[in-house]
Image (cartoon, rainbow, N blue to C red; front, side, top):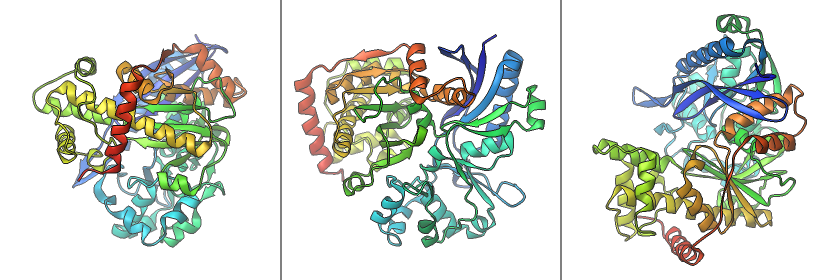
Length: 498
């Protein structure tokens, strides 16, 4: 039996799981107790999240935890993706099934919103990058198409906060996820009430915002009884999955933005940790974002399309009758010629295409490049382009902070792709350290351990991760070849695809 056990519910866009964090005071080990699928559900031409099925799966995970670790379990916390939300009425009834961030209802609403409030004013208040998936534009969409429902809303909870409410009855929103909405004021540490009122979005539904590590209360009696648990504590970790992942970056460097991270998954989140939001005109021009972190820090970062490109290519290959696992695709990409074709991973055509392979082929045609001819060439194109985009973003981060990044940490599931890791070192000309794969879950449970008093500081959390994780180092190579590719990529970005 472990000295301490902390339960983390980690929900991603394609799967979720309940994990146990087993802590002996110096090292942390994770055990997956229950994994379950997740993804959008088509409902009458819309894309939704099935949060009630997810809640059923979470309860199954709690039962597994109770049978295995019983009284050693001290607390539980939930992390998820950002921007999406659940509305509750005054009787705590759900108002509709929550929308998926890729739902088309926000199409065109970013530009529409900017006709009402200038881009510069929105950025000055929120510090967030402009993406149509942001909560702000989801709320504008609802206000325009279903104003009656939004008027009925008594409380808006982001997805992890909704599950914390189901666990404990607490109706609050945690800081790191609040900052993903483009509805949160980056300097006043509260909702951007003036901005929301100008857009005629009701503000009475906005819950109080709490810091990561806040104890939310005890597990509901009925939930505890059904799971076979005692009424353990419920703790809000950094509920945005990237916030938890960055808390678990195993860096020894503190107090400076001289290290960068890439949280590599469906999205690649590349950034640096800063002490306050960067709200300059140049930050606005570069469309970077300031998302909240542990201990009042901010994550100055850029969203990059990430492993979504590879996931969707694989799906396209399967639809064509060619099934490959990821190792097969990486092997084929390794054997393919370098730099044959390049894409901008963040071109809008790659956000939600019906066929990613066709979208990449069309991009290459529109930019007068050879169209990839094999599975390996498509994957190599995507991986090289991701690494080159990382180099561009690295330059932006160094410009905005005035500090040279000395090392790049890659965490999350994507850090298992050694080809991309080496490409990143090559493109950026910096050493790359990879691991932990499970950064998000580690950050979740270690923040809980700090709330319980077992850990004192953020530096202690990161030391425990270093003690508990096998890391790998990739040194830059083939610099002349990659410098040439960097120039070609910059030219490609300067002339957007038709």
